[in-house]
Image (cartoon, rainbow, N blue to C red; front, side, top):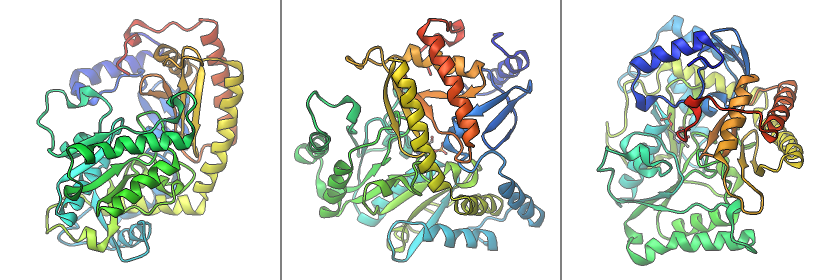
Length: 450
Ligand SMILES: Cc1ncc(COP(=O)(O)O)c(C=O)c1O
C-alpha cells in the first residue's frame, strides 16, 4: 500500500495486524506524530490543515497550551481517586461549572461518564427511571455511540448492529427532516408538518404515549451529514413531548460546545431540553462525558446505576475546566458563528464554479457539503466525495465524508482565517482536478466503506 507515505503505510499495516477491525475506519495512511491548533503533523513530517477536528473532539485546538498546563498541574498533584467514593477539588469545581451549563434555571445536576456513548445511554436510564416508562423514540440517521443502549438508539449504519442483537427493547425510530431532499414545491413549513405527522404515526398505531419515556434527538444530525431540521419541527416535537409527560433529551456530543455558533446546538431551536449529553471536545477528546439535567431527574436513579471508576477523574476534569475557560476567554462560540458565515461564503464561491456541490449546510464552523451527480436530480455522488477527500489529503488537508457523499467540515474552532483561506485555496484546486477527471483513487480506496 504505497500511497504517499511509506512510513505511515508501514505503521498502518502494523496497526491492522493488531487492532480489531471494528475499531478501524479506513481512510488514508496518516499516522499522527504531533498536532497544534488546527495543524496536524504526520510521522513523515508532512503538515495538514485539520478540517475534521479529531472527529469534532478538539474544539479548542490540538494541544491547547492552557489545557496542557492544566493537565500537567493536576498530574503533579495526583492522577486519580475513584470520585464515586472520595472526590477531589477539581472534580467538584467541574461539577458546579457543568451544572451551570445545563438547560433550565432550576437546581441542575451532572452525571459524569467517560464517553459520548455512555452519556447517551445514560439519558435512556435517567428518562426511564424518572418517568417510570420504557419506550424511547429516536431518529433514523442518528449516531449516539456504540454501547448497547446508544447503538440501539442510533440508526445510521446497518454494519453497526450486525451480529450483536438483540438490542435494547422498546426503542422506536422515526424519520428526521431533511430540507435539501424536500418534495417538489414544499415549503420549510410543509416539511415540518410532514415529518411531524410521521413522528406522530407510531403513537397512533402501536406506541402507547403514556409508556414513552423520552425522545432523543441530535438537534443537528452530525453523522447523517450535518442535517439542520426546521425550527418549527423541533418545536412541534418538543411541545408534543411536554403535553404527554415525555422527556426531551438532546445529544450534544458532536454538535455542542460552540461547534454550531451557539454554546449548545439546541439553542438554535428555542427549546429547553430536559436532558443533555456532552462529550468529545469537553476534555479535548480525553475520556470525559456528562449527562446534564434537573436534580429531580438526575436523582431518580439509585446508587451505582450510572457510575464509572474514571467518571469525573481529576486529570480529565482539569482538562475540561481549562477547555471551558478557553471557550469563554477566546470567545470561541462567537468566533465559530462568524467564521461559519465566512466558510459558507467560500463554499458558495466553489459552488458557483463546480456543479457537483449540491447543498451547503453550515451553522458555525460545522458544515455538511453534499456532492451530487447533478443539481436537478440531486443524486448523491459518493465517488466524487471520495476523490475530493483523497486529493485534499494529498494536498495537505484532513477531511472525511459523511453518509457517503457529504464532505464533513468541522475544524478546531481556533483555526485562523489564514488557515481557512489556505484550505479553501487547496479545495479550489481539488475541485478543479475533480472536474477535469484528474483524480484516480488507489484501488484500496475504491470501495464504499467510507
Ligand atoms: C452525536 C454523537 N453522540 C454520541 C457519540 C458517541 O461518542 P463516543 O464515541 O465518545 O462514545 C458520538 C460520536 O461520534 C456522536 O457523534
